[in-house]
Amino acid sequence: MILNILTLGCSKNLVDSEHLLAQFRAAGYKVVHDDYDTPSDVVIINTCGFILDAKEESVDTILSYIEQKRQGRIEKLFVMGCLSERYRDELVKEMPEVDGFFGVWEMPSILEAMGTKLDQRLLRERVLTTPSHYAYLKISEGCNRSCAFCAIPGIRGSQQSISIKDLISESKMLVNNGVKELILIAQDLTSYGIDLYGRRSLPDLLKELVKISGLGWIRLHYAYPTGFPEEVIGLMASEEKICNYLDIPIQHVNNQVLSAMGRGHDREKLENLLEKFRRQIPDVALRTTVLTGFPGETDQAFQELMDFIAAFRFERLGVFPYSHEEDTPAYKNFQDQIPEKVKSARAEAIMALQQEISLGLNEQKIGKIFKVLIDRREEGFYIGRTQYDSPEVDNEVLIPDDQVLSIGEFYQVKITGAEEFDLFGELI
Image (cartoon, rainbow, N blue to C red; front, side, top):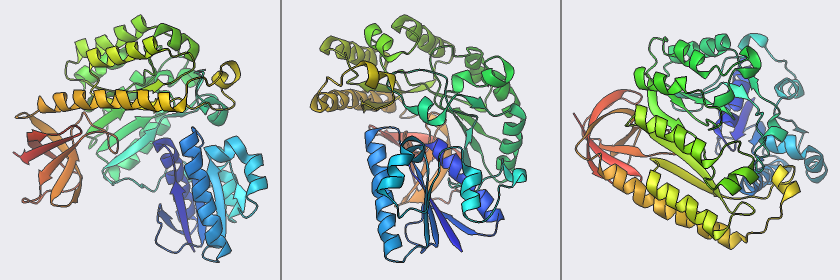
């Protein structure tokens, strides 16, 4: 029997799918992931329910597979993940054709619905859906923050950190299977370990991870500015395996907007932290996310954000227009007063600015040599990344395929050209 899991949303969802795939494979199923071509007997859709666009994508995907079930092309259809957790009652009523809806903590129930049981011995095992040389390592689940715009605490619950012992065991298993790069993810890396060890324990985890033989890169995603354990900055500067890269969403810089968002810090504290990174690690690549159109964001507040981005020059930046999500503090306390056209226009202005910044920073790399990890080969190029770039979301380095390179290996590459979001190089 062929079982296909489709994963929508973030990399944290992807890790959940990989753990579930391992359980089903051990139970005797032939498992595939995100396979829209191979006929499958069972389809499980791991949904996202974070913001409007993600919810719409999840619903559209479910409806398309309901139609396949009506046509007899699949036998069973299950839905799991954030959308199910958030809107289960409504989904059950609106989509009776689905054989079962499961939340984010219900892996045992999904297995039981398919006539098998959770194998406790396989809890840290995964079927990798990424290229075999990199993997995401989810170090905690849930979040204790109270950002006004965010529905995640209501969906995923309070923070639950995974023990350092279990994470090291999982990491060694991944590295033994060929993984060269581990990308640490969580709703909030900054608070990792408080619930287990009574303190922020990301530095302790990193000190153990760097000891793993065969591991080349460790990358940090989704750190929260407030309370960031600054020992990590020193570790990043001194440990070669820890990439000089941090994903640290700032959302905004205007103090009134930050306060309304419930971020727990002001602009001064945020700038002090970011400057410490730049001062102690001059070549650090800081990726951030900003949110525009939040209730109360005036033209002046938006311009303050633009001016900050122009002056600070983040190496990587993404932007989201505010989505007025039910069951969030902002939904309860504010009106969604800024028109969608204004939100979109502000987001487009930020990305136009970032495009200029990215081009300028990339042009500075021309003539320099970087260590590059090769991800794939396509259309006459090998495509790889430097330590300053995460897969899927950041710059790539394109190298002509007139020489044979190995996917998943590191090479020294000289940068010969640059575009806004790509680099071109030649093998040294």
